[in-house]
Amino acid sequence: MRIIIMGPPGVGKGTEAELLIKHYNIPHISTGNIFRELFETELEIGKIAKSYINRGELVPDDITNEIVRERLNEKDVEKGFLFDGFPRNIDQAKAFDAILKEKNWKLDAVINIEGNEELIIKRLSGRRVCEKCGAIYHITNKKPKVEGICNVCGGKLIQRADDLEDTVRRRLRIYKDQTAPVIGYYLASGTIINVDGTRSIDDTHNDIMKVLGE
Ligand code: ADP
Ligand code: ZN
Image (cartoon, rainbow, N blue to C red; front, side):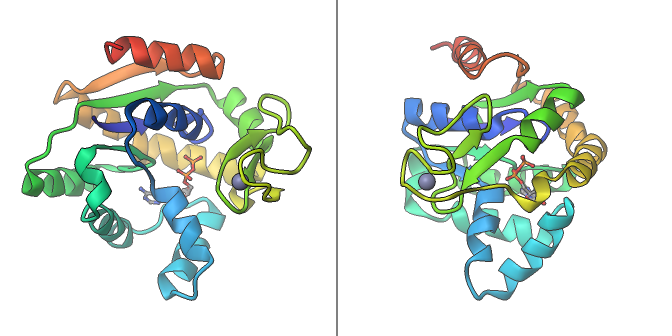
């Protein structure tokens, strides 16, 4: 399976992605997670990415596309993959097409999770993430067993700088201007699947499985 999962920030992409990769046993490639891992290193690219991300802006395409290209040269993607958070604009979608073409790979599905702004702001402001393994929680919708502690690895749960309300609003604006047009791009190739992301995690997951024919 080669899948892309799209949708506005905070619509539950990452959570749905975790369920899908378990089902298909494929790697989860989140460009946001890759950038956040780079924050922890001494690499210049990590510092550059952080400065964009904390402002709620997109990391420049040359950096992002190169990171994706490198990731797709690793062995584990041969059995398939799920991209989450990439492509985020038309130029990235074109660059991705070029890489796939080189490898003679085709996408099986582009899942577009739809949400509304009010819900997104509520979800993101309540979101907490494990600083160690990146697992996602929510202060009311997906509480950890022990407050402030990750169920999976025992790491500390933190709020991302870009989940502060003003930054969330900027991310939503950038989504509308730059990422939403990517839906039209994939619509033309017939790979888009629209799913309502305003319901529970499980309902959304079941819908996705149904349209994927599982
Ligand atoms: P969300 O989907 O909730 O916004 P992500 O973890 O996917 O969270 O992305 C967080 C941030 O990382 C984005 O706001 C952006 O700054 C940066 N980022 C992630 N993916 C890309 C990408 N494909 N192109 C440019 N920037 C990206
Ligand atoms: Zn963890």
